[in-house]
Amino acid sequence: MSFSGGRILVDRVAVLLDGEFVKKVLGQRLGIFPDPAAIMNEVTRILSDPSLSGHTLYRTFYYTADPLNGTARHPLSGQTIVFGSTASFARNTQLIDRVENQPDVAVRRGTLAQQGWQLGRAAVRAMLAGKSSVVASDIVPKIRQKGVDMRIGLDIASLALKRLVSTIVLVTGDSDFVPAMKLARREGLRVLLDPLGQSQVRPELKVHADRVI
Image 1 (cartoon, one colour):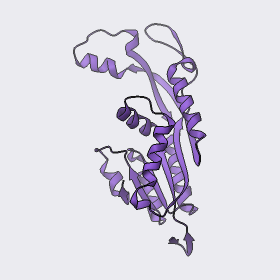
Image 2 (cartoon, helix red, strand yellow):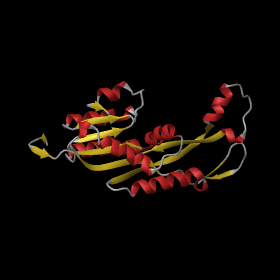
Image 3 (cartoon, helix red, strand yellow):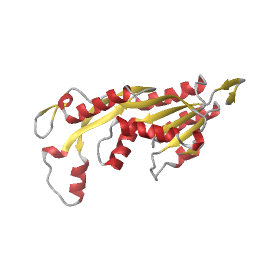
Image 4 (cartoon, one colour):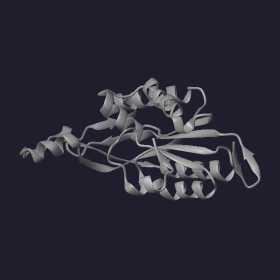
């Protein structure tokens, strides 16, 4: 058990998954878009870590944004793109719905917003290799995620201040969460970082985590 402010806390752990980070890393590792089983396998791996021996799971939090909906006119082709009818929309909607129905999982949703257009990654690589012309398929929507980081930070603060858990495992590569990590540690919680095996971890994340798993 853990002691804090005269209160005895059962050793409970909350696992916080930065959804976009998880999808990106697992997608690169697996070579396909990850399914809920792949994501939950990572949670099982985390909970089996020796540093969490004797802990019980409070809840897994999965942070993501609802897929982009609405329409936009492509700047080169003039074609109207209906985001809600794309394969990406269907794939991500299904993933969120299925993750949300896993036991002891809460999904926290931000939003996506289109902010203009940009060259896609494949087009950038082609131009670096010498391609000189741009076709309509090279131009893709510039999409930004909103509200997700805020929700992660608020949940870390709530878990710490309400003494709901003794340990937080944060699965991310984003150093924006350092202030929330520092708060949790000041409140007596252990903060573990899981970068999903990525070798390049920002030093400030390591410094403000009690352990990297």
